[in-house]
Image 1 (cartoon, rainbow, N blue to C red):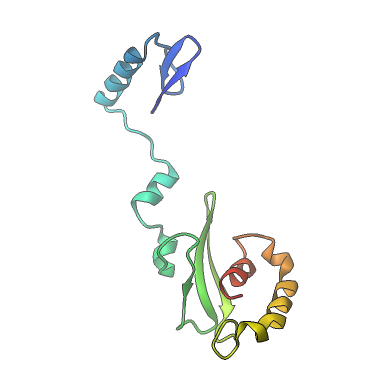
Image 2 (cartoon, one colour):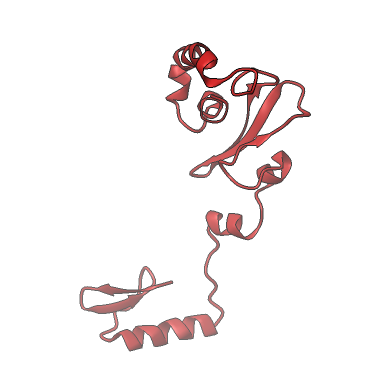
Length: 140
């Protein structure tokens, strides 16, 4: 827990005594740790130490990092997204869809691209927790 400057001096922790000097507050911190105080684990600290189960299950390297899934029967990509404490696995994209390929160069696909963006505009605006957002970002 950090030592904070407060009105009247320094404080270690959220509550307790206010010390006139920083050195006294540091002594208090050292005593607390020596007597067995352990920093409470935050949810994000746990995620930093070990891989989240949803990341392992989906086989992706991290949050908001899409991955191709060529063996999936219907969807072409998967991504695991975190919004605060909410974690969601999203599968998106039609398997075998003609988006950016050698057969379908940029000039010829402009009309398809505009149609996709118009058709899914409402869902794309929902943000990173929607499949349309990821399909728009990755495939189009």
